[in-house]
Image 1 (spheres, rainbow, N blue to C red):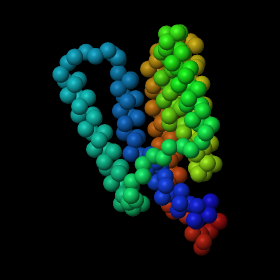
Image 2 (image 1 turned 90 degrees about the vertical axis):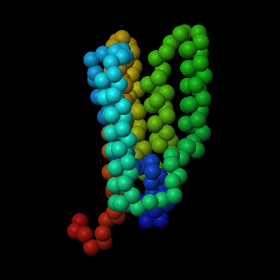
Image 3 (image 1 turned 90 degrees about the horizontal axis):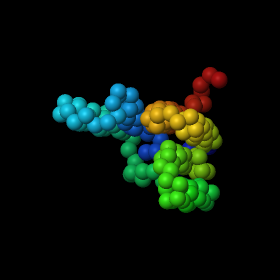
Length: 193
């Protein structure tokens, strides 16, 4: 990637590549799902603890934003860009039609992991992304879809796929952060190879 395309890519996808901002959220969801009782128990201590965890996650996300601002600078926010790929939107439309059919006639409610995967896999279909980013999004999507199918076919607990989804999103956030670090610090010409 030459300097011009690297800078253009960074300007367009700067906030998308700030993966450490979302890391506390994925860890909190994994911790919540690892709890022993999925049902609401109604104790005020758990409610207070949940509220405290939410404020801690907001604080850690704010700290991560502050880190990115100090380390890499600030751009006018242009958050996540929608993919322009006709193939991606065809997949979304076909899956939406299938989901309506499955809910209406088959009474099947197990498509949520696939919906979430289709939503976050969109960088795979954006041709502006470097090949490495497209590859690790494709691999992550394949892992989540494989585990979702495996767990549904074996009638295992649905919380396991939620934990896998959050861990994969955490790994993608770290990978995006490393990609941002590598794109913001180009190799020096006088460095030893």
